[in-house]
Amino acid sequence: MLIKVINPNTTRAMTETIGECARSVAGPGVSIDAVSPATGPVSIESHFDDAMSVPGVLEEVAAGELAGVDAYVIACFGDPGLLAAREVAVGPVIGIAEAAMRTAAYLGRGFSVVTTLERTVGHTWDLASHYGLRAQCRGVHATGIPVVELETDPDAYAKVLAASLAALDEDGSDAIVLGCAGMADLCARLGADLGVPVVDGVAAATLTAQSLVTMGLATGKRGEFAYPPEKAVRV
Ligand code: 2AL
Image (cartoon, rainbow, N blue to C red; front, side):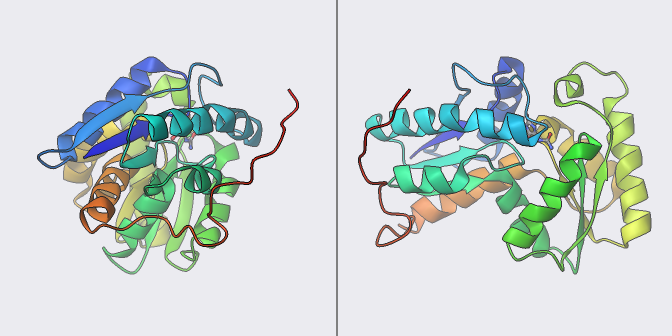
């Protein structure tokens, strides 16, 4: 089975981290192809960045279809281009925000999301509502760390830990959801330090994709998610 994990931003070091995380959970016989688009924003932390990343994501899905990919993970917590990618792909397409929130909902009554910049908080609430998980999402907490600084800020872990402790205190949550793919490598340490389940969307989405393919399930193609109609596109 081949799962293509698309980091919608163009920061290669983050793509490496994401690929390692996906490989660490993938089952035997599952290959992970971790990629980032050739063009697009280096990080995604605004609605503008989100929109600008979508053409690159869809190009990677289109290339994956020619290469025989079985399923896709969109590894950015805004789930950019998710519904469009489901139209273009034959196999399942899983976004890390949707997978992480659905996984966290199995683990208790409520979860808190710990994310990057304050300005991403509104979009995260929108996603929780969109996925029908507004009641389970008890809070969304910004750390103030820009995405690219997750790799370079020596205090990044301490800031994510502090925001998670505050979130558990304020929200009375049972679990923490990591609100950025660039936090994937913090997951195990954070879970051990907090003593509560910590859900990384890259792992959750990779295993959801693997499960769906194993069960022989894919996006329903009869209506809304049928391949988009061919038409001229002016560039
Ligand atoms: C993200 C993410 O997962 N990747 C990225 O570039 N930005 N999420 C976020 N909340 O900033």
